Length: 288
Image (cartoon, rainbow, N blue to C red; front, side, top):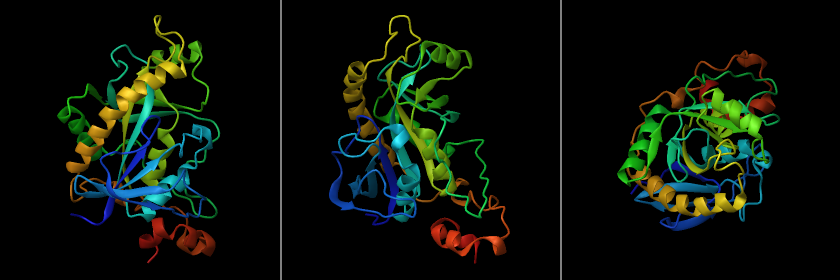
């Protein structure tokens, strides 16, 4: 059994716990960016040590715009996490993505307005490559896990990340469809950006709950309808995450672990000491 906590799980709407997790302990983590959504639950899942975080906090108290994305991802880094499996509820923008299906998107489109989505600034500039925002290796692991448990799953597609907390207008929903977008949610883009900066592999397991509001037979998204599908999705998601944990490679064969190698632009001599200390966990190996 591996004692290293290399795998992080972020549970979204409907996925607030992992029943199969044993040897549990709560870890309250302090970060330079404030407090995460809550304590991390570190335990054993299928022989692997994992860290679970309920994205919206206990009792679903935090809206997508209120989440401290930086603290959530930095906390994972502090725990030694190298892989993040993020489970999230989404709306479908295409007929083929049926409620209760799962999607492993490989692209994101940003429609948020006022969210901080970088660890950098304060005298240190970094530009990470983000053409492919999802780790390809981890995306394959997640897709294979979905098929292994018999879930209806789609590989690839674009996730539109909107600000919320309101759902889309009909005009917006139709526009996203005309652009060829596939699914829509409110949380995952910032996580993906920050995970890349933290050199953590990241994938979204998107759980379809509704047809947004574009569908002629589903023209109003209600929380009641979504919760009904969330309950059904949560069981599938738990099985998928557990299967993915079992299949997680021992060594990373992707470039996520060196994402900052050519991204730090600022002359090392010009970086303020306070910034260097704050970000040492992320940049220390590049400042030796």
